[in-house]
Structure formats: C-alpha cells, structure tokens
Image 1: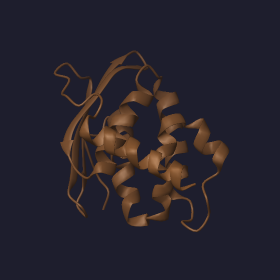
Image 2 (image 1 turned 60 degrees about the horizontal axis):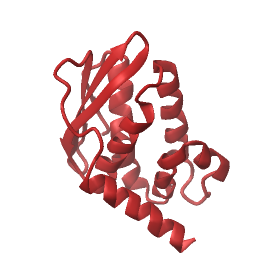
Image 3 (image 1 turned 90 degrees about the horizontal axis):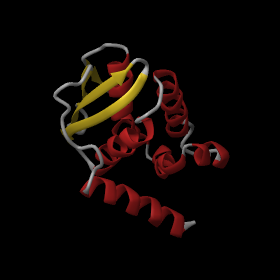
Image 4 (image 1 turned 180 degrees about the vertical axis):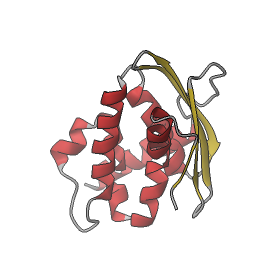
Length: 152
C-alpha cells in the first residue's frame, strides 16, 4: 500500500509542478473565482462551452500542491464532457473525499474516477479536503453562472 501512496503523491507533485490547462481563456463563456481563506488557495476558472459541452477549460491561480494538482486533473477530466457529466464527476469526487476519515474509500468508486483517485487519501486529512475540492466547487459555480465561491 505504501507504493500506491507514493505513486499518488508523485502524481500530485507532478501536476503541481507542471499543471495541465494552466492559462487563461480570453473568450471564456463562464469565469469563476475560488478562494480558500484558510490556506490562501485562490484560482480563476475559465470555461468555454459549445452548447452543453465543455469544449475548453483552463485555470490560473496559486495554492498548495493539492489544490493546484486537483485543478489540473479536474480540467483534464471534464474537458469534452457535458454539463451533466461534469456535475456527475464532481459529485463522485466530492463523495470520495468527504467520507469519514476512518473509513477507507470504496475502491470501485475510486477506480471509476480514473486518475482522480489519487486524491482518495485526502479524506484521511480533513483539513486538506477543501484544498482538493476548491477547483471543483469553482467549476460547479461557473457551470451555474456564479462568479465566485469561497470554501470557508
């Protein structure tokens, strides 16, 4: 199990160092800003829609490794998805992270999330859950036309 944990940590560190979709989208249809005042994570999320499909998604911001890696993997996972599919992924990801810390995440649920499963260990550290979900709450806000979200 420690090999798996090390792999998860490495994926998070890699996405922190070289985040995917880390840029602005000047022609974005939706823009939302997320802020976690407890640790200072802040990001701006840009979404370009084609009907109800997320054609492009990008983010800019600063924060801890978990926050930045989560935003990077999130943008990869929802690009090309419908709004309904993106909301479904958000729900499954949120459930994975917010279960009781003393209960292991359901392996089948984690596998269904693909690379996002690297965050399953975050549930053991409740103070870090907000770091991992900030980008997701910001996406949820953007998809509902809200311009800002705070994870206080």
